[in-house]
Image (cartoon, rainbow, N blue to C red; front, side, top):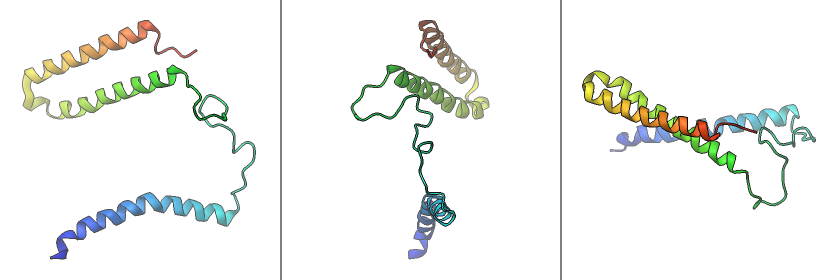
Length: 122
């Protein structure tokens, strides 16, 4: 009766191994080699664009959010294109033209944001 649950248990164990294993290996190696000595260079901001701040309620520039929204928009476009490309023979010309309308709307939106200067970073 419990043999049917073995794949689920195996899946959970592999997931935990993939999630916890690399962190445990990194901790063991950094402890063994003595590389856990933070200095000013290691504690400096990394690829965030601004220095660390004291107040967690500090306002961010709206451009960070705009770039994130634009990335999600075009990432979802790609997520819709993969299944469409795989099933193009089965869906026929109606599916093809509906995707062309979808891509046309996205191109119009892309041109609009380009003209508004949303893609420019000062």
